[in-house]
Length: 170
Image 1 (cartoon, rainbow, N blue to C red):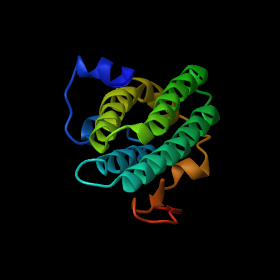
Image 2: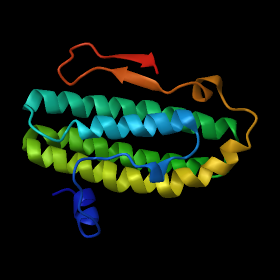
Image 3: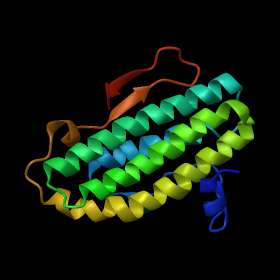
C-alpha cells in the first residue's frame, strides 16, 4: 500500500474516481480540465487488462502535466503571489503519479485502480478545494488571462485501447 493510500485510507473510503460540483472553481477551462482528469481516473474502475491499465495510467500522467502547466501559466500571468508554493504541490503530485507509474508494473490491476482512486479522490480533490480555490479570486480579477487558458480545455482524444491518442480543443 502506498503512502498516499495509507494516509487517505485513514480518512475516507472511495468508490470510482468521481468529479463533483463541489470542486467547480468558476474558471471554465480549469473546471473542464479537472472534470476530464476525473473521467480519465474513472477508466480504472471495472475490468481491464494490464496493457490497457498501463496505457490509461500513462494518459492520466500526460494529462496531469498539461493541466498543471496551463494552471501554472494562468497563475503566472495573473501574478499569483503563491505560485511557487502551488508549483511545489504540483511537483508532489507528479512524483506520486510517476511513482505509481513505475510501481504499476509490479502491481495487480485492482491495486493500480485503488492507488488511482486515492490519488484523484484524495490528494487531487483536496488540492482543488484548498490550493486551487485559493488562487481563483486572483485569476477572476486578472486582466492578463492567457488566450490558451481562456479557451476551452484541451482534451486527450483516446481510449486506453487507442495506439495513437491526440490532443484536441474541446
